[in-house]
Length: 353
Image 1: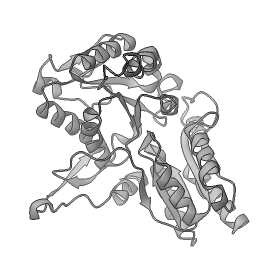
Image 2: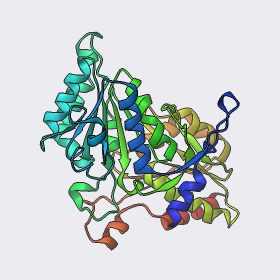
Image 3: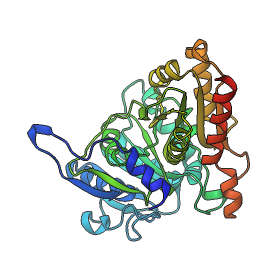
Image 4: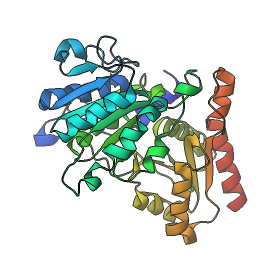
């Protein structure tokens, strides 16, 4: 167990036991990978319209092992291995969705989704509008995102911000186990396209959730740690670096409030601004590049809605603006790190305290 795994477990909301109908649900120990798999299994069991398609999702069990065993359980008609043609199979998913199915399309990494960008942006996101409100596209697209695994530049970027720019779709970034387990079913009920970005470093994270954990709300951010000195805003893998930084800062009597965005489109402005009204300072931690990033959008919204609550300028910690390197020491240097978060908060609280 490493520090991130420990924080993963500690940050989990108290969902390991539930008292629905007076019954207490037992806890189960599960990995993020298994949580996503169980979410897909449940969806396939509950709804005959649901199927999974993508590169290597069947015989190989998924590039990151998420769909392992599902071909044997559900058969080749519902677990479809596709050619290496993101535009082709994403388009097939759009067509299936328009015709009443509920496809889950898996794109191996977010970098490869650019080959399907025309299908996602020009077709899936606009079809309801272009059809005059006649046809929805109830499509879910899952894809791996993020660096840190030495997979080099063509497999390691965080481009979810690009898709958060597009009207007509929702963009989900589950970090916690209950979100990895519960966001998929909620997304499948949405009449419009939903993109789910799963940071590949999270797949091995483990923790406990209720055995009957199910669908979760996908429209609200969550406070993962309460504090009164500064607001730290993050999502996905960077959330756990942020939580670790908050632990370190707490030993110095700096209490940081940590927000897990959970959803990048639509952003939960209310939760962000309410926190800043309490702490009067904000740092946004984002694994995407600084220029044109989701951190820039959040910063702008804070300026528009909570400017007079701030005691210091909003700061951002983002990836260095280079293609993500292969060499481990260079890759780590390019990504936001705990030490940078700690130093930034110390400076802000001391300077403006």
